[in-house]
Length: 276
Image 1 (tube, rainbow, N blue to C red):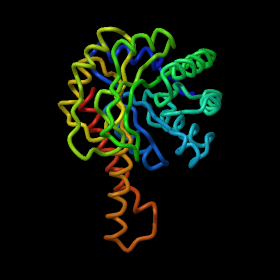
Image 2 (image 1 turned 90 degrees about the horizontal axis):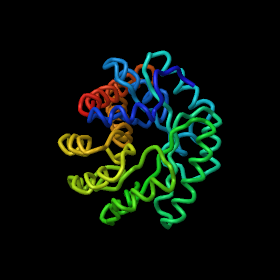
Image 3 (image 1 turned 135 degrees about the vertical axis):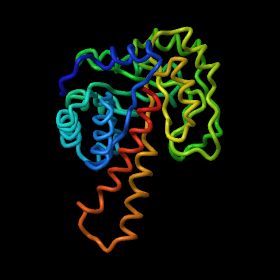
């Protein structure tokens, strides 16, 4: 879809060796995509653009893919398009056919054996497209789910899961959650170290919004090389837009959106500086 120097898999391994990470940013419309692109372009940093099924449903698959590709080209940013938290094999197949560089199969809430079987099936499919495959093991609370439930990734299970499925990246449960936190999250860095000791496969941290800088940096130093950012992007865009609408007698979207785009840009600049 987009000209790039190396594959996402290669870039993740490179980041892991450098004790740095790629930022994976969800986008929801042209304005959030533009804010992300302006940040990555300003810092000359690569970025992963992520879409969920709900975002694809909202924008339409052809439009969303075209937007991502055109933006990466226009801003001359090294980047990849990733399908985030897909539970459907059929959706993954559609996205790979549409040109996605990477897909995530999330069967983490299924029994361990079913997670392995479905993930292995996706890996086999993705090889036909030379695409990266990410999976998840353990319990990482999604929006609306309890963050009090504990289901941390077991290091030995992680090693076995990776060997059995052949995945390219593994999202691990070490104390993060999707959405905002009611209290400061405590990442289990010792558990992360134990997982890292058993595999060279790139490790992913979901729920990057709201995690303190020092915790993110400790995670990166111990094997995390992809950090997902979604909730903070939605939040800062909408909150800024709400303020603009409330304070100005204006109906021209072209005048109301720029401050919200700038807020997304500033957020992503901050995160890129933190993890690069």
